[in-house]
Length: 597
Image 1 (spheres, rainbow, N blue to C red):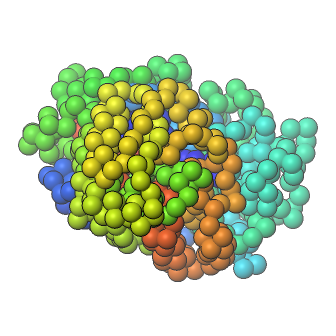
Image 2 (cartoon, rainbow, N blue to C red; image 1 turned 180 degrees about the vertical axis):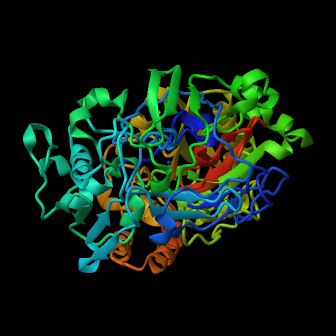
Image 3 (cartoon, rainbow, N blue to C red; image 1 turned 180 degrees about the horizontal axis):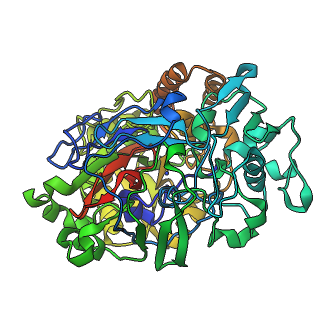
């Protein structure tokens, strides 16, 4: 499966736009302190964790939950440091694209967020509920709500949903998720089975059926208990064939949500205005309070954070839906004056240092590297606990079934344990260990990390040879199976709050290939077998517990990675906005409850 990326703070600090569960804020103040990882606890460590539940048909009825004090009107401003790569829902995979896309694009399911409690529920968006399974979990049926319309008033039908799914197979749709394509065909190279609807070709009813205008039936090759979550990804919605402009759709999508794209200047600005045909009674998710969204792109740091701090003029109505505060502003934001408009929440991303198993074959040597790793110094170099909490699990605290685990005592000795590392190297019969460390040459912070690692590893008798890589080529180079590096940093996030989107893609040895997210190249037959067994479990609660157990086993017996940070969203917003809530599944501020005071 493709790696899910995010424009998150820790990710941007490392290699730019990088790796994409259930955490929750309160209603704008960041909530109470929580420290599930057992790591550093500071006044900034206010992130909370909350489980996402699957709702009922009643939960899926619109309108969206009431927001205290909310009113219609005004212009909400979103400040983002990067441009938007994709407006086409089928191409949206970065969390920035997904959360902004929610304003003009709807899916079969999505996340309903209570702005007061932060309670997050997966509900039917276009669908009447989260789907009904049969055939042991291989078949999933969804029914569309009444009153759904496009921005021109055309009714939304199941045939349009089918066309939207078929369009995911098109050769120009390369950036988005690939779950549905692979599940429907049973093939990772799904285009060999079907190449898209161009030329009038269609998936047979035995694969994807529309028995009437309101019903769509997915026939997967194997059971998928978490299909309702997959339907919340951007590509699960309809496309009106008459408006499909192929690759050009990426800059001018046709809306079925509360807003339409009225103006778009790539890399500079996106303006969204009301869709008069959107009916709030069909939508349990989107309050759509502002008349307009002014999304300003390419706003560089630290200026972006400073504008939110100062909130001069129209910036009092501004927020950054995706971008965390610049690390240079952390001491500023610690002031009490910002407390009432500060958000601090876990994101669904875990940062790790990969140990190249192809090169470091002795597990005791890999364990020695883990013991020697100075996680707290690295955290400090990357912006401190506001940017990310110390983490020791392959699965983050926002994923169902998460349990704190620390098999190497990293939280007890976060500066590293060089003596234990020396002991293991001696047992492995290794002297004068030399490691090649690749890092992104994207700023002084990562040069500082390299120096920190050199000094700490030296205490364990390990010599580190740091290699700076151009940020634009970083993932290409470390993504090679025969890369010449022993240690390198990556990040990964769950696509929905189940570790089925974490452990299989990053730890399955049968997937090892160039550009595959198993960056450590782990290929343990026992792990592969467990992945197959757990994937077949249809009870998601049981499945979640099994993924957690497997994650702990992998760390103890294989030691392929060094998890060190659970990423966090941490930033302020203008006090001209109300209804601030947090989308824990995306790791972003939730625009659907925001109003202009």
